[in-house]
Length: 250
Length: 338
Ligand SMILES: Nc1ncnc2c1ncn2[C@@H]1O[C@H](COP(=O)(O)OP(=O)(O)OP(=O)(O)O)[C@@H](O)[C@H]1O
Ligand SMILES: [Mg+2]
Image (cartoon, rainbow over all chains, first blue to last red; front, side, top):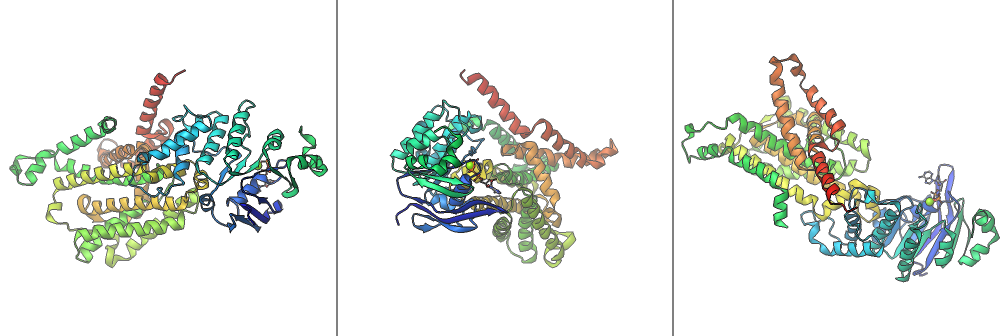
């Protein structure tokens, strides 16, 4: 196998609720795979299982052919898996620059150097600034993250993710709650990341985005995979149309 | 860069200079440079109270590492002060060792206990963590009472210090030096890569973890640095301040007093806790003396409580914190374009 990520019969139960039900994913390196499904289908939970926030009830997760089931999130992150969150998840009372700088610093092993000066690692700051440019936040370096507009917070999240230089990126609804005008800029950033050869697994609701940039689409319903294939195949699948797309404009 | 720093620190430098210069005549006299009986200013009293403030300010600064820079609230912090005080007291009085050995023992003991308490309790969140730290401190308190052949039990242990330490002027200067060294070291730590991660943990623990930071390891690290500094403050207490180790140091009382200093002065500001330490220590010394004026002052803790409530209600960022926010907002109002 040379999948960068595999899940094998991944299952998690919350009390009586089977939130993720026997999900087996195969993500090939350098591809763009989307996960779609109605609200509550278990998409975010699946991501939480993959990146170690939840422990599965059964099943396994393999990343770069290594069994990572049960590893804590920080270990998985350091192996090269980055994650952005559906609900904005940043360091609110730190500056925009510091948010990204911390993400850059996380990849160097200087975190335990408590008598060095953070400001003497200028390369981290330079890199953080460059990334802020890439995601369209230049000029906002010194703004506190919590006063950013919602769209800018989403951009900041993507910037933090980029800064970790992860090989596999899990994006959980990167455009959630964004105003219509902000969406194209974020899609642009995602396309550019895709072009750099990174592997991306993304949850989204906006079908036009998914159909335009995915190589593979996986459809979840009530925790289980009900369809998988190219965007065209999935869009044409009658089961998917009735279960999910029925109510949505494609 | 350097100049900017000095400018930002002008208040700290001014206060330091003042504190350094005030008892200069005494220092000269104490060391035989001028005739001793010619100098009776500043009074011994000033020296004693100041030394006490310096030592407690160190404890407050160490507490700020936890509450202000990492976002963890411990109710057992003064356990480490007790550990430091007993380490040196036992080394000197029970084992007949040099105070220097006592200092080393204090560092090692407070580091070990920090790591143990931290690893066992930091996996718990919020108030569960606070409760566990309280429980550990209580264990320390009970041990200090029960192991009386080592600790002197209820009476505590009085420390006989070398002659040059039995001099209040020397104690004063040592205390001031101690506070200055700790203050600038801790400030440097908060500006280090580690310090930045601690701030990230305070802001959003889960995000820090998702970025690959081992949050528990960092928190245990912060507790250890903070615990060792509190331990050193305990050493200072037993050598240059009260020259005494007493079991009640490990109870929640002193920890709550330190919490008060930190909150009143301004959590996460470092200068705030120093200011808070001065206020609270001097008040808790002066207030009981006012009993002649009104019997109300017999319940002087009441006033500390009022100060606490007042701060939380009217200056939620503490004195220094509120001052800084106000200056910053004024600055932003003037300089933000648009
Ligand atoms: N920690 C938890 N404890 C109990 N139930 C949970 C937990 N996390 C998720 N769930 C439940 O699991 C189900 C799947 O939730 P999840 O957030 O994964 O859905 P989703 O597909 O991401 O939905 P959305 O499109 O709204 O983001 C929901 O019913 C949710 O209530
Ligand atoms: Mg979700």
